[in-house]
Image 1 (cartoon, each protein chain N blue to C red):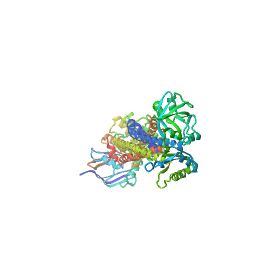
Image 2: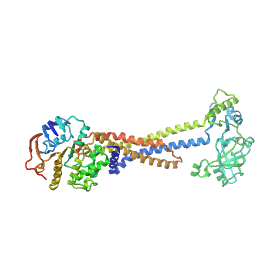
Image 3: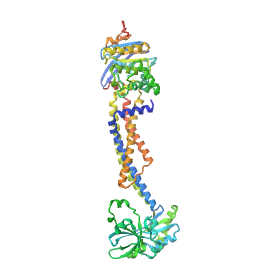
Image 4: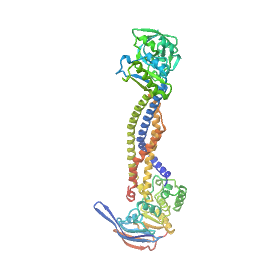
Length: 404
Length: 230
């Protein structure tokens, strides 16, 4: 009595009750496929976010001002940023990020604008990809030149064309506007949205030198957010600490803990943590359906044992031992759960890709997930199959033979 | 061969006690062909179940082939049923989902015989009961007489020393009964010991010895005169 014999026998029995076997498997299929779909979408999401972060820069550190404690004099000025880049050894790039809502008018159209100002390093820090033209340079930053880089969708919406390098554009608030020259067009970064909504409804995204922005809006010219990029992974920590020290020296506010340096990768860890907990939670909910599926397997196996009482009696009469019968029924429940698990895996992966394409997440199917799914469904088969199998194995041969 | 001494069997069902065998002793020598007769409820089926190691005795002793089987465990009894005993039932008791060949192979599956040898021995056993066709069919697709022949093939495939037949012709007509009894007599002639329960005197007349039972006791035990030989 070997394993192959058992598997053959179990398959024959499953096959002779096709519909019932399939319905029994359905519980497992639904359980496994929902767990697989959730986990692979969750992991896909983590991979996407990680990828985005790495594009922005694994070495980026965000320096923030604790605004609840800070006074205006503690805010980071453009001169601070310049000093950071010149004086702190490990810093390769440094830029503040000013974000202002405003307006942009072309001869054709007026549009809401989302204006971002920084140093010329913003180009590297934000990993901006240009479709046309160039980013502003150091000289243009220093002199506060009226130059702008606009988003692709803004170009299409404002000028009805894509390559708008050299065109002029009025940018500003309702009260003060200034004429700008477009020197670059950014490749669309948020394609997901532009597919879904009309580009006319999207605000124009405009990059310009922080110096220009300061003049345009008559701002004080200090910020609470500065991005620095360390020259290597090893120096991320030191770059951040030195930057904080330099700022404290310049503002004379040491000990008040105004400035905080936080590597973006740390934020990534936090996001991944939250996403991981969320995925685990949803997967656990889905796993409950797997338990329900397991109870279904047990139920059908119990029915099967009762139905086949006479068969068990015959087998015992001709020499089947307790172990033979136990193993026979256990094999059956494990095979049902395993086939259910494999089908669930297939449906789960298909579902993950289906849902992923709607939600814009590409699922990540790790070998670990696959192995755990198969092992887990086998475990369900064993766990919920053991009771019916024991019941079958312990039947009294005479009673079983008499059973009609 | 088979020796039981002062065997009793008591069934308990809650408060009610039912004594099915009241101190039965029987000695069957190798090569014998014994018919056990008696009215229903006389204990002959209980006796067959005990002799077939399907049930345990309440008191007394059962020696099979020199071995005391009254003290064996469930799995040890299963081993004896597999190797030493062949069962033939009134209702054939073939497994409906398996083919005839697979049914005959089944005792060898539990004996751990390799697949190729199993096939060969099953075919051989089927040939001995004159059934070499339709072996890939299921039991429901052949006649009652053919089914009983399959059951006999299954009973002899592990070369047991004893065949226990419980009303083997009870569900069959006269013509088929003769066919089945011819096969059983042939097996007996080849040296297999046969114990057969029947309530038909005609069928009992194929045996060499008749044991009569009543109320859980053996009341008569005599050799068959004018035996029907096929």
